[in-house]
Each structure stands twice: as C-alpha cells, then as structure tokens.
Length: 213
Length: 256
Image (cartoon, rainbow over all chains, first blue to last red):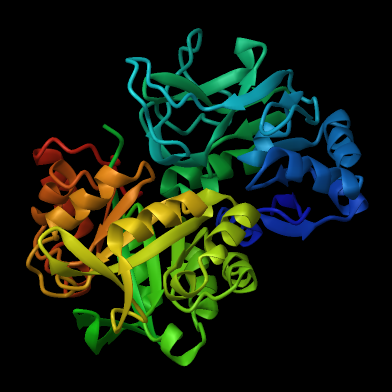
C-alpha cells in the first residue's frame, strides 16, 4: 500500500485528510517527526487558516527545513489549501510574510471585484469547476489525469497562490471571471487550493492519482 | 451566479437522527451515519449536523457521529448545538468537522464569535440563527433550539454577528421549520439584503420547487433541507433537476 506522511504542525482538519487518503488505499502517518516525514515517499502538507500563523508554526518546529528537504530528495509533495500557498515565496496576507520558496510566486488576495466590475463575496466558498489554463490542451501526465475540465471541487479561501511561471499553473477555476489557480505543480511538487478530501468523488480521484505518482 | 449549495441537515438527539415541527415534537428517524452516507451518495454538497438538545443539557454528543461520518463521507461538514467555547469548537474540528455553527452561546457571549473566527478563520464560524416572526418584516432571535426568546432583533443581531467575524449565516425559520410550507422568503430576503456573507436558508422545504423562490427571490446562497430527504419525499437528484430547470446553477454530479 502506498505510504503517506501527513505533516502535523497544529493546523488543519487532519482527520479528514487522513480518512480521504485511507479511503484511496494509503497507509497514513500523521506526524511532526522529521525522520518519519523524510522517510515517506509521499508527503502531504495540509493547512487551514492564516499564512503567517502557518509559517510560524512550521518554523517553530523546524518543519520548514524538513519540507524543503522532502523536495530536494525527490519525494512527492502535495500541499493542500494553506499548505499549497506556503509553497510559494511570499504572501501579502496582513503583512508581507516569507513562504517556503519551493515554487516561485506570491500569495495575493482573491479579487473582491468581478471582471465585470461587480463586487463579489470573499471568502470564495463553495464548489467551482476546474478549467484548463492557457497553453494546456489536457491534463495527461498530471495529478489531474483522471479529471475532466468542468468537474467541480470544494474551495474555501480568501487568498490565492499565483506562480511566477505560468507553466506551473496546471488548472484554474474562475471566480467572478477572475482566474484563480486551483492546482500548481513543478516536478515532484503539487499544490491544490481546493480540498480534495472534501470534494466528493472528484477529489478522491485526485488523491488516488497522487498515490500512484 | 455562483453554484447554489444543496445541504442536507441532520438534527440529532443522542445517537439518533430526529425531526420535529417548529423544532419541537422530535421524532426518531434513524441512524445519522446511514442517512449521511445516502445523502453524500445522492450528491449533497455539504452536511449540517445539529445537536438539538445540546444547549438544554449543556453538552454536545456529536463527536462520535462526526468521526464515523468522516470515514466515508467526503464533503464539508458543519456542526452545531451546544458549542460554548473555542475548546468545544476545537474538539469538533478535530473529529472531522469543517465549520462550527453557534447560536445560544453566541447570544449569551458575542465575543465567542470573534474568538472562534480569529482562531480558525471566519470561513469556519457559522452564525446559526433561529428566527420567529413578531410583526410585518420583523423577527426575533430565539435560542435553545427555538425555545427561548432572546429579545434580540434579527437584523441588529445579524449585523453584529457578521461584524464580529461570522463567515456564514445558517438562517432557520422557527415558524416554517418542519411544516413543509416552503421557506419564509421575506425573512431570507431581509437577511441577504443586509449582509455580504453567504446565507443558508433553512426551514420549510416541502417540495423541490420550494428552493427556487428561496434562491431567486430570497437570494439565498445555499439551501438546507431535512425531512424532505429523511422521509424520501424527494432525492437530492430530484432537487438538483428542479434547480437546473429553473436556471439555477448547481454542482454537476454523478456518483461513480
């Protein structure tokens, strides 16, 4: 059975992430132990809440360094929601906060105005469809291999992770016409803004693909 | 338009799924986990668990039920009833809940709204409101599952709650709850006009078409439904079809 370490740094609904992965056939260890994390072939960085708080918790346990090591040694890493956002260089949430710097880019607010100039509700809460970003013809050979454009996943967030290199953005969703990165990726690293563990059968397809990478 | 969320609401007493009328005269329906799984498989967008007697007895027994549900149900779960502190909220979130809904304790101590919101984010803090009409376009906030009048005016309380950090409103009409007479549309309108956070309309859904008025006229962002599902008068598939026919955008769903 594929083994996964879910990093426990005090934030996020870890039980749901664990149950989702187990449902897809994984053996899951929820842990903050560096050796356990480094010996797992697949690692999940979950998270809910504020960027600065998440980074502070990671740093206080030295886990920022461990996550970078996970990437350097070629294990497969999946960041979920805040865990995705922290993969980037920095966030402007509250004050400018440095991230893990694993995928170049910044975390910025989801625009509170639609492309037509209407105001829209923030946070972005609910089910939204995945769309192919410009330059992508399909999702073959990615985490989304089993997902079709137009399938919906569950989002809840006020900030969004925007990679510097457009090629690192694998899927978007549209919120009030604004493109919001839904999945980002580079080499063995993936981040998803939605919650695959809360997105029904479509979310589980993505977790299954993660386990077979 | 954003996708309108179709939410199955499960009222709980002890280990049982129950249902009442006007939140009273509670009748046992069955086992919560079996119903939760069925609604998930039918394509519910979210679940709400509400412990109906928790405030009354000063306890909340939902932890075990949520943990069991989280084994095979992979959609967001909101839990309410008897949450009195950040610690209560923390425990329920650890059990697999994604959001907590607070009513009675927030009326007694509004600071609880900001405490939960600051600790877990406003998206996690659902303000649950039980409203009873007292005059034309006037409603009073009730607590303890519709038993106790609080003296608070609905609109004043909603503005205060959102100001303190509530990220969503679960709006239950005590007058319509369990009656199958349709939603209290003026009530839903009064609230959606006043706040910018998402509003879940609850109480009164008798047939799939009832949700159309709540969305198109009431401007509700989500619909909570209970006995229409519990008594199998309609499936979530029927309700989704009614929404699509009315031009309301909902999640495409196919259980595979």
